[in-house]
Image (tube, rainbow, N blue to C red; front, top):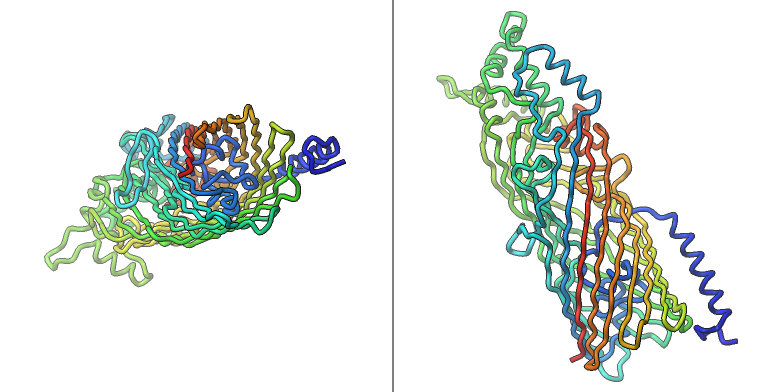
Amino acid sequence: MNLLNPRAPFARVWRCVLCAFIFNYTSTVYAVVADSLTLGNAKAVSLGHAVTADPPGIDSIHFNPAGLARIKGRSLQLKMVAADFSVVMEIGDYVEPRKSQLQAMEATGLFDDGYFYDEARNATSETEGASLMLPIVGMTDLPVIIAPLGGASYAPAGKSYTVGTNVYAPMMVGFYRAEDDPGRFMGERLSLMHLTYFSPSIGVNINDQLAIGAALTFNYVGVGMDLPIRAPHAGQLFLGDLQSQCEFALNDNFIGFQDVAAELCEGERLGLYNQLAYLEFEVENGLVPGFNFGVLWSPTDWLTLGANYIASFPMDMDGDFRWTNGENWNNFLAPFLVEDGNGVSLAGQIDGLLRVFGWSFPQGVNQTEGKAQISMDMPEQYMFGASIQLSERFKLNLDYKFAGWSAWDVLEVEFSEPVDFLRLAEIIQPDLAGKTRIAFPLGLEDTWNWAVGVEYQYSDTTVLRLGIEDRPTSLPSDGLTPLLPLGSGTFYGAGIGMEFDNGAVIDFALGYMSSELDMPGGTADVGNSLDPSKLIYSPYAGSDIEVELTMYLMEFSITQKF
């Protein structure tokens, strides 16, 4: 009996055993973030991105460059991706430790009523639309993400190789909130962009069963953020508490500190939830090289195995920043900045003392502008897949993937100029802040995930596709944060492909995914921590937070010989 015949009963048994093994194995995998969702390939979306062993045309350059060897003649692909990312954040009440702390302070009668006002308590935040870091233009607000992309390939007649290049976006995510949205303290705007704009590639048929491929990619990467900053933590709590003790601080029991106490008590009292500053930065790098390598092996006519490697590459991004102090922060500092007859202010005197320890004191610089820099690595990725022709009409694709997201442990921004508020943050939390830097600990973890796609050949010219992909979060269980609202979820895709008499192929796909994060008060170091040392960064200290991300994708492509 011929085992190569897809209709052979024994071959079907082997295929079923293989499928059962892979399904059982992939049930143990873990996490992935938002990579490859906006690549723009309709076939990949409709198959849940399970295409490592069945790479889709010119987009093989990303999914497995060996797939280029399957394309003959001259081919042109034009495609369109439209995406809508919606983030809803429910900010609940305070947990009991926070309530008790605030009630004890309120009971002293030393604080004004407005001191405890929190606009975000029991409030709902919802993003307004997409914000994207675009080359040259910078961060741009859009109702939805829309991007035209495409590529081309060429296989010389009688040769065993195909060359090509492609434009695609492995990561294109971002959002913006209204200026008065209660969730803006986790980002009024935020965008991460990875665009591959040139990718000279080659796929080679070694023999009838084996093909290999490689791609050299040239990438644009950019990160942008607009962040109103508040700090209802022990640092601000401490300043407010000092101001509440002015009567005691100014008497003889406070000998040696009356000058400091006088200025502290004369200044405007900081509300616990006042906005202290506004940070804006955009950094980018327009020439970042990368490398992909892939293999396809077809031991039988019903089974193809594939593997793909996407190399890690450094992303050193440069740009500009602007830090603007909040009005009440400036009013709080004002008495410290008044100079005496000798031209010396109390802020200057304190600064002189702090410099002995390598620290400094705010000097009342309302707005600071300069250069900003971020250095981080794009994670490496490994992809393994199988494509199984179950019958003449049904094909099953299976993928198992790794991504080294632990490379994104900390997002650190370096500034060329010292920032007033960060001078104090440096004293309280030196590991994450300095006068010229601020760091957001992400603590992402390496991930494995699976994907399954089914293709049904409805007719000679029409194919139907369904896919599902496991996308649990790459955030650690003890490191969830609303700054990256990427919870565990399952991606669903569906689509259709049609071939016309002139050789043109049209592919269309829809994709959907939703995910949730639940962060009870005090559990998110970057978000709602109760730790008094978390100056960077817990704007919702002690508040329960729930985040829901909903994503819709529509992708369309036309492939035509020319």
